[in-house]
Amino acid sequence: MHPKHVSVIRIDGQDVSESVVATCHGFLVAYLLILIAGTLVVSWDGPGLVESLTASITCIGNVGPGLGAVGPSGNFSYLSGLSKAVLSLEMLMGRLELMPLLVLLAPGTWRRH
Image (cartoon, helix red, strand yellow):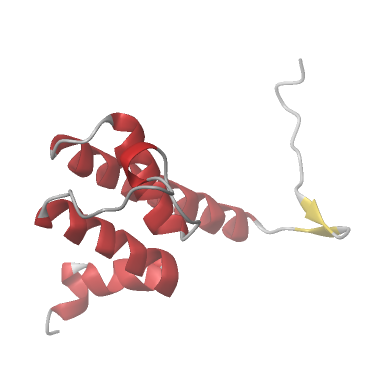
């Protein structure tokens, strides 16, 4: 309706800068991309999409059991080593913070200047 309207995001009555909003968007995109990549790798390895998605959500979000074979009455033992490695990496990213680990894994971090 109003193509030139600009909305300002406010928290507790204070304006939030565009850089903070961009950083939040970057974190959300990175989180979702890692979640999708982990889901695809685990589902490629054998289990169904529901088990793969909830296993990835469980590991990166540290939120408890998933659904299906990785649910409360199941476990991750039937997964291959590749799936367990991917889910372990997701768990580390969820527990130790996503962005610092992504910076550590970036090739530019380890190059000599």
